[in-house]
Structure formats: structure tokens, C-alpha cells
Length: 332
Image 1 (cartoon, rainbow, N blue to C red):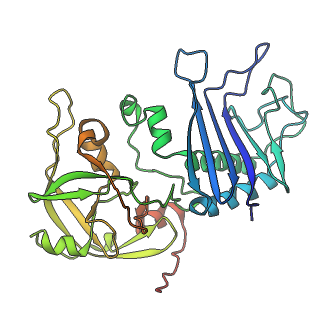
Image 2: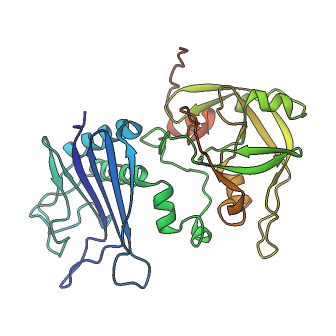
Image 3: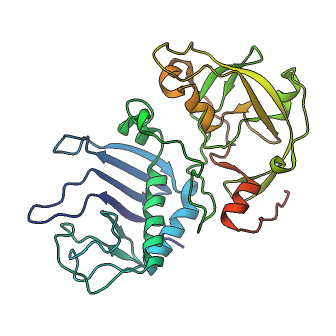
């Protein structure tokens, strides 16, 4: 288990030569008093310097499991020797961790300036280090990070749609955070105004049983492939049915984009959903939500203490990719 107080730093851009390396991303995370203080500085293309950092604070409890995993990984993987000689992981990325029980740092104080390390990273070490990098980025990714990097606005066109939103070969799907959505998206389902949860990484559109009942749609049983989902916390939940409904965003799409206005969409009914509907990542980007629908978002003044998980995958698809046995669901 990781200690309650620690500091870690991720830097992308550690390889150099005669000149020192030029980082394009630095993430620092300090843990104390049950909180994580996160700072992110990014260098824009063409700029010689990092932009002023943006900061955010989240609860350690939201990321406790992956922090323990990261701490365990860094206890196992090697660093280059002598320090700063070679980027043995080949990711042009360094991680520094400091706590009472562990001090770990690859890349040396001034990056990797050349030379050869007599300590090499094996394939398993490289996979673990890559996972460590992903964990730190996942902890940092949130509204602050997305705003600083302009990922969902100016750089949205650079995102690539993928059928594999996470690594499944070695690790089960992970949740980025379990905070309730800070904003909801105004939209219409069968002409009914709905405030949807659009802060999600779900693979399917979901609806609560109450909303499904009042939507006026014909509810049908799901096929065999879509009866269960694997939630990001590892538990299994059942889908009780599905319905097709006309979905429209609140704001009229721009004529300058090729992204079509959404029409008939399938919603799967998930008991316990804390919002009326939860939009899939595909639908979010289909309607260009964070650009063309920016004015349709509203801040939640008093978010509920419970929250929808931010990553939901079809169970059969996840099993086939990972070869994993299902986790037994226990009711409380």
C-alpha cells in the first residue's frame, strides 16, 4: 500500500544530446491531508517554453487503488545506470516518486544525454512502466487538464476513434475518476427535455428504468451479447432491456461541420443509474458536444454524492479481449 504522503512528477521529453531536453508536458502530484494537489504544464507546438501551469485538487480516495498499483510498479522496475545515461523504456518519459519508503527516478536529473546503461529494461518492465505512465496521466486527466490542453475544443480534430479505449491485454478497464459529473448536457429524447450525463467513457447509451418508463418508447429485451456489462470498478451489472428513441442535441449543429444531427439511438436500461441518461463516447463526439453544444452544458450546483462510473464496457467484448474470468457480483 502506498503511503498517505508522497510526491511524484511525470515529464515527457527527457532525451537530449549536447543540449538539455525540452519537455512538452510536466505533471506534478503531491499527496497530503487526504488530497492530491495536481499541477499540469504543457508546451504548445512551436513554443520554446512551457505554458503557465494549471492546478487542481482531488481526493486521494478517488484514486487509491491505482496509486497503490503505481507504488507497487515502481518498487519492481529498474532505472538506468548510471543515471541519465539511456532511456531504457523508450518512451521519452521520466517518473520521479518520493515518499518515506521509496525514492525512484528514471531519466536522471537532467534527462538522458546519451551513453549506454548497463541495466536494461525487460519487456515486462517496459509494460509495467507504460502502465505507470498511464496511471499518472489518468489521475491528472480531468476538466482542468482538458481545458489546459484544449483537447475537446481546438484539438478535437486530432482525436482518433478507437474500438479499444483502454488496454485489456494485461489490465482490466480502469475508471479515471468517480466524481459525479460537474456539468450536464441539455438534450431531447422523444421531444422530452433531459439533462444528460456526458462526462463518461461508456461504450453504450444508457438510461435509468424510471426514464425508460416515461419515455414513451417500446421496451424490448436485449440480445444475448448485451445482457451484462463490466463496470469500471470490476463489478458486473445486468441490462434489463433496451429501447430506441429519437435523440437530438439542444443546440442546432453548425452547417460548417460534417457531423450529423443524431436521430434514432438505442438506449440500454441499467438499474441504479444516477442520471436519466448517460451518453456514450461515440454519441458525444458525433454531436460535437464540447464545441457545438458548449452552451447547452450547465453546472450542477449540488451534485449527488453518488456518481455514474466513467467507463462501462460490454462484458462479452471485454472477456473476449482479455481472456478474463468474470468477477462475481455481490449485492449489498
